[in-house]
Length: 94
Image (cartoon, helix red, strand yellow):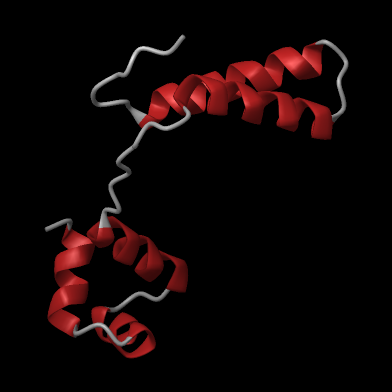
């Protein structure tokens, strides 16, 4: 049934999920029925596979800082508890 794949990309799983949801909703199923159908499709296609999802901690901290909506590195540092130098690095993308 399934061929064991090497290096499954998370976008493949998301695309399959989206296609299944769209198909089920187009057929007039309720949201709960469509969700269940999409989940079953993903589990049957990728069940037992180990998928690596990178965490990107720097990007997560940069998003955390952006949500604070403060302007200076010093304000961001005080609000987040992250050192000023690290705040500057995160804001510059390094």
